[in-house]
Length: 117
Length: 113
Image (cartoon, rainbow over all chains, first blue to last red; front, side, top):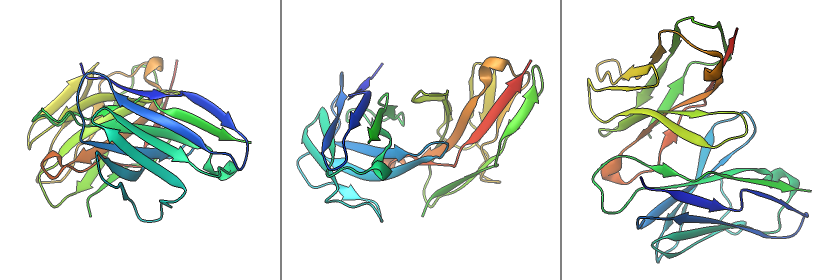
């Protein structure tokens, strides 16, 4: 089946630095990918919709200058957390629909744990 | 906008008890409905899904039926196990509209032996 892979799975960074998380679709092309974040013991909140070759669409309340999304190819989207602070520590998950499928299955990455110290 | 409402947890059961986790939704289109499970420290796993009214999704003893008339997709299992302890998320998406999954807040299930 279709696989979505995220990297890194775990990352610790210092306050003020930037960290990049990659989301790859391994065996399908995805024009659109979605980025979520999940705080401990809470639900997944959609952050943005990543569109290949164009700007991402951010949900209300998400700072686009802080969470930079680049969807450079049909198989790769990246989320960069800029000038990270401890409150950015969270679980970040990406997902994607295969382009050439009429089904409704969305595939999720394994998630990336970010800890900002 | 579209939304999902789940019963609040935590739900605490003894092994072999019957489980119901309620989920209702609001949507303008014709969404597909999903249940995802998240075990401690892990990502999301698709548990089951239904794509149209009256469809029943089932997997690993869990079932849920897409009820358009009541806008519900309740999760049930006849006999829970300790290994079922996890957080369960109800979600919807409108594939035709290309929208992302919208999740409910999640329900924590704890099963004791």
